Image (tube, rainbow, N blue to C red; front, side):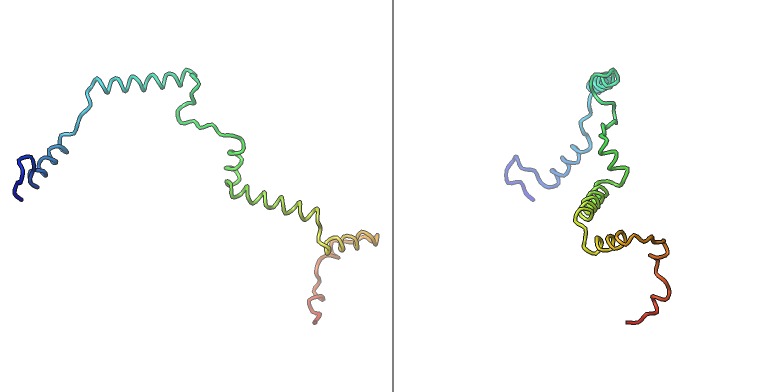
Length: 128
């Protein structure tokens, strides 16, 4: 590609210029690095002296966050909340079949054994 103006570069000249710029990146001076390290040491000393800053790497956690992490996170809390609301609902507004069975057992005054509530083999043989 020919130069049309004296200030324009050809592709090969531009490639050479960019390669030289990439090879010689800016290096920070020793004085700058010393000042950065001194500042970092001062911040660490303040944190260690109790200047109101949390220690490095420590994240304050509340009791709810710890509890949620222990039981499986927010999906587990949502499941527990749903089960709680369903339990309160069923306990308060009982379905008719549950209250009818409970009234039938309690009103007769008869005592029942655990075996009375277990299915028997002969009930499986009944057709229809």
